[in-house]
Length: 130
Figure 1 (cartoon, helix red, strand yellow):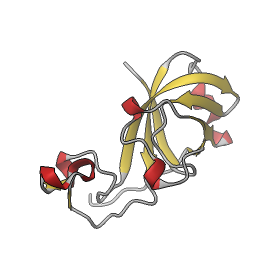
Figure 2: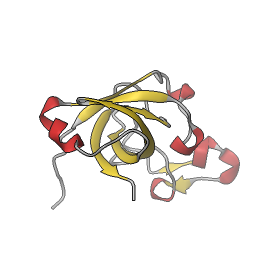
Figure 3: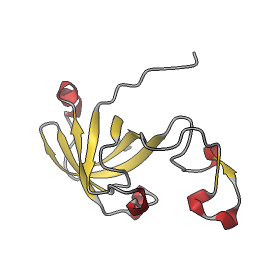
C-alpha cells in the first residue's frame, strides 16, 4: 500500500496565526486554544476530562512537503539533517504531535493549553496520554 486516506476529526482554534509566532515545541508553550471536534465525532470524546493530558495529531496543512533536509530548529551551525531525524514540520507527511493539557470540555469543544500549532490546523486524532 502506497497511499491512505485521512479523515480530519476537527480543527484547532487558537491565537497563533503566524509561523514566526509559533513556539518550537509544546513543552515550551503556555498558549491556549480550543480543539473544535466535528459533531459526528463527539461520542469519541467521552472520558476526556479537565486536568488530563491528551496527545493530539495535527496535519500541518501549511508546511512544505517536498523538503527532505533541514537545519534543526533553523540553526545553520548544526548542519543539515534529514527531516526524519528532526521534529521539523516540513516533511512528506506533515503530521505534528502535541501533548496538551485539557482545561475544559464543552460538548464537542476541548479547551487546551500548551499549543504550538497554527490556528485553523486540521486535527487527525486524539489519544489519551499514558
